[in-house]
Length: 448
Image (cartoon, rainbow, N blue to C red; front, side, top):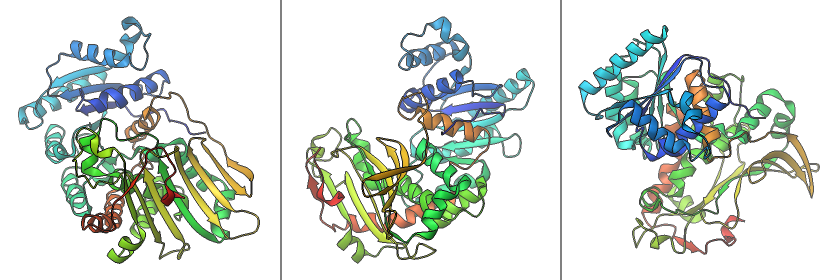
């Protein structure tokens, strides 16, 4: 069973963008889940930072209103102990005086609680604001003055060059071991269980080490469409949204070499695996990849009427290094598909096992298949709550606060992933292969 650890380190959690949609929809539920589960650090405070004018009292009222989306029947009296964990500071991200004041506030808080807390800075802000904000944060709490964490949301760059530039900028103010880049898929219960199975049990490793692997398919299908995210999605597309991160991380976790089951070795193994992925040629991309858009997508608010943004993609390639050299791989994802399917399937050339399945949704499990016979090799449960992303973010925060990097992509990992994806994006922008269309909610022939 996937479990979320109790965070132990005394922590001050500073949230930038603390009145925005991300904070309301994901962070409040995650923090409340940790609070109810008694997994917050014993010494803990949230400092909300945003441009909107709030006193701490009015900010707690804002948190309470959003909390009722998670706990509709909760009274203000019942919520008070949780709300008292929140304080607020109003300011502009480019105002140096504001960050001087923030530093004073954080030091005063440490003096009040009688211990030095780890300052965990979470950037729930648009990507364009990250570089300036990072340098301002370091003026509030300079390097080596106090233990620090920097938690950064994706997208992390828009290509290899911009990701490297962002990494270099961050490293001017934060050490790599202080940086935690968010990919919430790395804390999904199925992948957490997969990692445990690989590092603690022999069955899985015996399968991928001794069987002849015929192919690997990594799939993320959703029945949901772009919905109200038209403008954002049209600027990104499915390949950048999930292919550059979630799908490559899933593939790495399934078959990468793990010399030792330590956090550092697991992070290094993911980076080395993704770094060894082949560079796809324009000819291969044109002939073998598929990009498609569902009918009606261009009618969504915020989408360009002549948009060529893909809502489905299929990218096949062949591994060229390591013990899985010459193994065929397909990564694919789509919106408005006929079913929810989120899994990794490893196909074998052997007599007694046809395939190995790591299923995230809709029926979380890890099993082998021979004909119609399924044999479960690992069990796990999806813990409460059922609010979208709350489990993953609760786990991300708890691990980051305690300095465990296992579930976070490294700088090199992110750059390597962009290096693999960039040629595909460039070739597609050149107009090849032709953008296909598909009918929502029906089986897409290319996905079979």
